[in-house]
Image (cartoon, rainbow over all chains, first blue to last red; front, top):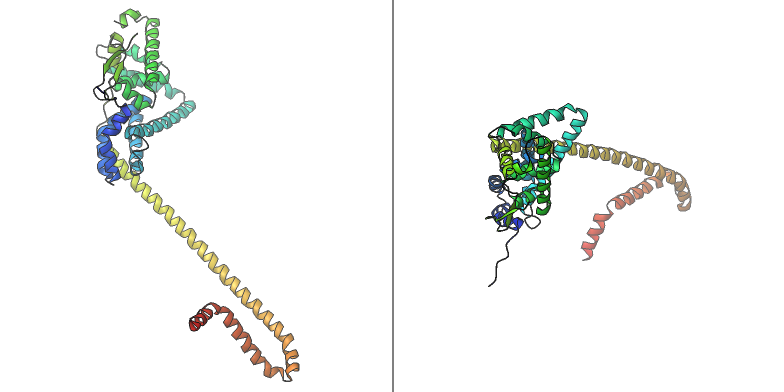
Length: 204
Length: 148
């Protein structure tokens, strides 16, 4: 008996978005863009939030990314790339530009960096339900290297879906998993170093 | 530290996750996905409309600049053409005058007539030659039409 070969996440997404590609090909751009927003505005915003870790900057970047998508929608080629891949690439590029601009700003005004981290930690700690170690854990997450922190944040933003996270970041799933494990490892070490419990306490 | 593997209903691929332990639970609570800002879509459409209007204004401005540049170039070319034409006419007149001043006495001597009688005929010949040169295109076309 033949077994059907499972489609990759990108192929699945391309199949799902065929209706949008058809609308674009038919020149119905507004309808296509509305459908696209229904499917992707949340993901685009969360990707920006994960990469930039600043809600206001994430909102701006998501808006600018989607404006770019709208402008380029008429020239979108479904044969060249899946819609999701195309949208995420535009979004990542916009976020990279924003990160670069932020880095330039911080080099000129180093105090802004501390303020942004403090705000981020407070925002994260506010999510903590029992509040016992929330602020400390948030601070330790902020101390992770940016690539590990981004992957960790997006993993939870995307409901622990590694395949979706890989698509969002344009990385192979194996790289994403490796970063996730490294992020967890670093966090565990930092938790123990901060006297917030042994590894066995966190890994049960 | 093994992954827990379960089938993702959407992709059909094994969806590997981090271990579901206390740390994962705490991180899940802490790292809640940020909600989409209120009125995000309305703001987006507004920004698109504003960006389109701005883009349109920029394009219009660029077109106006281009039109002004082309008008300036046309004007410059026109002035240059008039100046060149005038120079050419003057040069031709001076050359023709000089040539006639030399040629007419010699021609009058050869034809045994006076310069005063020869001058109008020489000018007429020159004028007809100039006209034929200027109108050579239409005249040749007319000639070909007549031959056919």
